[in-house]
Image 1 (tube, rainbow, N blue to C red):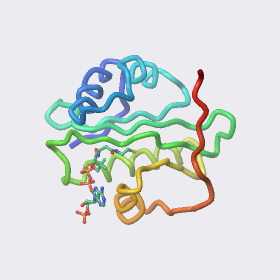
Image 2 (cartoon, rainbow, N blue to C red; image 1 turned 90 degrees about the vertical axis):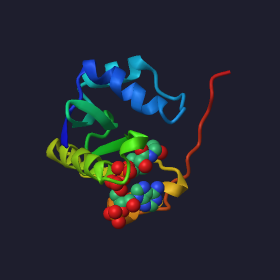
Image 3 (tube, protein in one colour; image 1 turned 45 degrees about the vertical axis):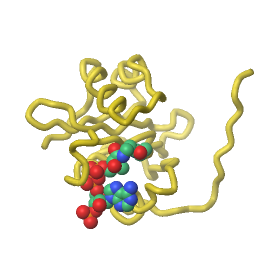
Image 4 (cartoon, helix red, strand yellow; image 1 turned 180 degrees about the horizontal axis):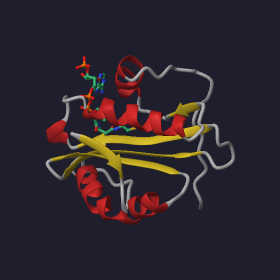
Length: 135
Ligand SMILES: CC(C)(COP(=O)(O)OP(=O)(O)OC[C@H]1O[C@@H](n2cnc3c(N)ncnc32)[C@H](O)[C@@H]1OP(=O)(O)O)[C@@H](O)C(=O)NCCC(=O)NCCS
């Protein structure tokens, strides 16, 4: 398994991995744009030339010592092989290499075991998420 920077041509494969989970959040253009954006960190895990997972996020443009890990996702047929943990580790290493001092993520509670126990993130308990939707 190899982890490498994503390119625009990986967008379709990432969307497929995402759609296997019957999710609706990402569009093809999101992945394409992320691959080209200077502040994004977008990596794919590849096995036998096939994308089996991705991690996507960004260096906060208004505070470049912080990065947000937006999502880690592994092809549902390939889970439990430590691909997800390796993607998160590669994301953090790339962020730190680019001058970031802390990586944060908004996660679903059931993923706390993965991020906190396995990937060594720490719950800060400092923030709550609030959203305003355009009417
Ligand atoms: C979360 C996800 C990325 C983990 O990927 P994965 O490749 O299956 O995970 P890994 O094999 O690297 O897991 C590493 C360790 O974490 C554990 N782990 C994985 N998912 C876990 C979870 N939800 N809760 C607790 N522990 C978990 C594994 O058992 C493994 O433990 P081990 O080291 O004792 O064997 C994957 O389940 C996924 O794509 N989920 C759906 C997408 C999603 O919800 N992403 C999060 C949005 S940010």
